[in-house]
Image (cartoon, rainbow, N blue to C red; front, top):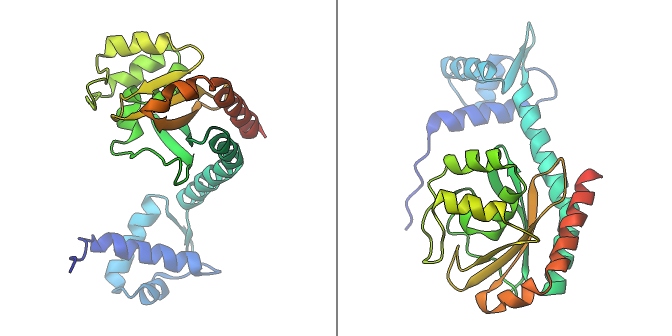
Amino acid sequence: MDSEPALIESVRRALNLLDAVGEADRPLSAKILARRAGLAQPTAYHLLRTLVHEGYLGKVDGQGYVLGERVAALAGRLGSRAGRTGRFRPILRELHDTLNAAAYVAVLDDGEITVIDIVDSPAAPRADLWVGFHEAAHATALGKAVLSALDGQARSAYLADQDPPDLTPRTVTDRRVLLRELAAVGDYALDREEYALGTACIAIAVPSSSLVAAVAVFVPSHQAQRIVGHSEIVRRAALLVAYADAV
């Protein structure tokens, strides 16, 4: 039988308090919140003070506690990401169906390259992302396409914070070589077994002044030439992503 995961009890208690505040339709006192969360009052007071200090709760004098600005900001970011993903999904679906390949979109968000949506199928499965894109941008077409959209100073700053891992015999890890390759990215970025043996990926940066992103398709390495030959289809998808983000 699997053992229970190690949990941090204070975090669970704080989250229970947040749930209790979020479920209420009015400000609630510490005493009521302690009861609803099943906590001793001293524990509840300590956690409530911390949550107020960090901005996750607010305190209305004489009335009680309400959700804070950081919760609203987090909800807004999640809603924005969900809305963006919803706008991009039909584009990726068409790309997947046209090329019979797993289709991706990745963005540069707060200094990290993040895959925000993937459309795949049993016949065209996604890559096994055994190393995150933030750590492996140098070895992926998506990462290289995103970085190629930055200016030279921003690329250098990004790579300066990285220790590029050597993922396959084809992976380039020398920063100077990487910077030269990124500066030379033309119509598309290509990964031929740099991230994982037996795989290939072509990616094109999204032509946008407000969004640093790229669209890509992933296939087994023996199909690399096929997707390179259809790079204009990937380019069209990247253009559609730019239009969708601007709406």
